[in-house]
Length: 489
Image (tube, rainbow, N blue to C red; front, side, top):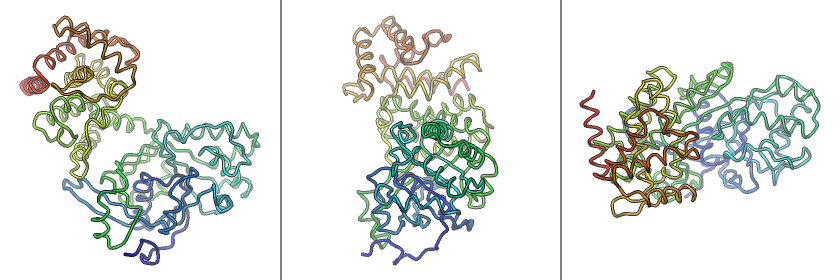
């Protein structure tokens, strides 16, 4: 069977407009897939030249296939489980600057290049003071970018029309601002002239962005079946879910150059991405974290099983609708639409997402993802969000490390696990003993950043739920919570 390349698969010849740092699964199934859609549906004519950011990577494999690869999308689309695939054609070439520096350096002279995108992992946006302008290349991504921009500035003699729209996709908060800050650090470290700093500010736009798509990657265990379906060999197949969202914080003029609306993509260009980031963290990540101890101690293993379960599913749905959404600062219709998409994603029949894979570092996750909802709801509504508090109680019971007679394989920092082990070891199971335990947990400022015993009613409600879970088990405790909630509504 023939290997996928441009000899057996004829494609358009696109103008290289996008410089991409990173060649991994996520960018290929998210960024390049969207560029491919814009080319095919909106006639954008944008080729992507990819730079491998580390000495070891996939440049060789991608170039062997002439930049072509297949994206498989699997999940719920328009209410139905759907699988579909497409060959992404926009990647023109992949450069390893550690082996082909002159080819990489020559990119500064291409006037059509307009966008720079990246995903070099969260650790990739970092300042490495050992980097020098004369390195070929610099070790860090921001160092490479600074040198590239400076050479561009020199070659085009400061032409303001030769700057870039720079959109990093690394999963750190305010990624565009952080990248720009480090570029300016290198500018100062390398004593680059003031004219470059002016050009950097006036001719270039650094955008913050939020990306959202689950990309499981290369489906190794299914490749025999997939190859037979495709009719060609592709060593770079990448699987992703149907859902995608890209939020770009920047001027609306970005949409004049990125034909996202014409292509029907779920891309938003906004003045402030903060509400959208908060929406994702609180609804998607927050629901994941909140359901994990409840579902696992109920006896369920996967997210799909949890949200489709008649009781646990009601708990998760009500938690999102009644307690998380009221605390968020976006139009209610947008929030409910996003929540519906999240529930569809949770039900993806093609992905076995084990709740225990979400359980890593659950205490710090609860602090970041769920505690803000709990505190804001209490402040706004003048009462506690019972389902979120129940999840907190379930988390405390979860860290006892037992599901019936079964030992739970807890995964957290050793200090956290040791602390919980000590607290549970001295808890005698009485109502007073459980309350003392809960007071210790809520009062651990290292966990929460504050003493939560000061939140009106929280200690009593949490201790009551922990007592129920310990005495009756998760099923009975959750069933009672849902029954009471239904009666109250």
